[in-house]
Image: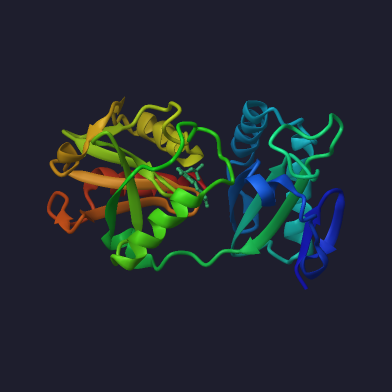
Length: 279
Ligand code: PDD
């Protein structure tokens, strides 16, 4: 029996119920986080919770107690016997339930808070070892991609298009610039330096992206935040993705074209090793 947390209670998942008036259901009016758990221990939880507070603030949803979520996650890992192996914590907060109207519900309407801990099936090891393919797609999202909103329709369609093309990830391109993946950030390597799109309203500033910055600093690898035009992406010596479930993933083909020599490069591999060691 899987136990989840919903609005102050730990309940069997099969009995967890939200209202059909929930604004998450009606308007995708909420934020979420996915936290990776390695061997029973949440990784970078504080950074995820910090971003969640920022998202709530941006959406003007009252903080229903983000400070307490780490302890709730810990209890879910215990109750669901996830203290060994790979897992993820999923957290979602919405503006709560109220009769459907675009304007905010009356003050005092409690936000909906949902937390779940689930086993995570890691990607096949050859993905990280040999690299994956990516497909570029037009970025049809809104212009507040810095908010980790549950409104993910464009991401869902993009990832499905990638899957149907035999690719692992879809890369969003806006005005000829490669921004990020459907559920990951994108880095390219030129002359040994990392280049990635600047953290602004057009991308999610990934927690793993920020971790890559830290690791690159420790390894003496320069990082430049700058736009990467799509045609320039193909001249990179290496390309990789970063993300909570993606970790550091080499990309060896984009739109069917080889990147570098078509194999994961040394900079990506150094970062992968450093990432593993930091867990
Ligand atoms: N996605 N960009 C987008 C659009 C994302 O959805 C994600 C994460 C990232 C990487 O962020 P982080 O390093 O904090 O995981 C970048 C999560 C994992 C998801 O939707 O499942």
